[in-house]
Length: 116
Image (tube, rainbow, N blue to C red; front, side):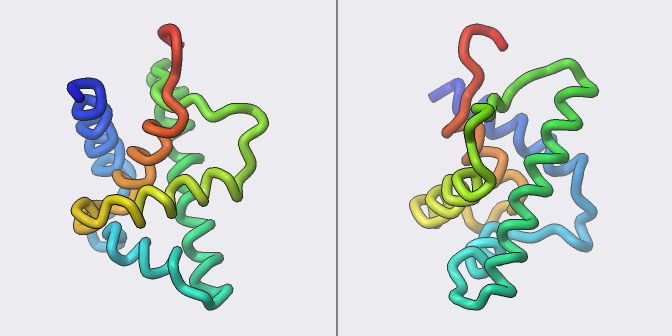
């Protein structure tokens, strides 16, 4: 439980540093896009998730810290599915920043092992 709380705090700090509050998307907004049947909204969901992954990877690389360890064989579709599942299963968090929730979902699904 302490590990998850630390990761959540880290995700909050990361998202705060990456997002402009005027453009920040909440988890509710992201969930609406990810749950929508229209391909336009599905594309927005996919692009948002992949943007968070790219930004997080770059920030951690520049800080020489590793908190997210995506398997080399993980597909973009799989990564998107992990985020969609997290949003569906955790409605109590959807009021939070979408980047925080995206990052949290991915850390929980793909944690680094053995001090990576």
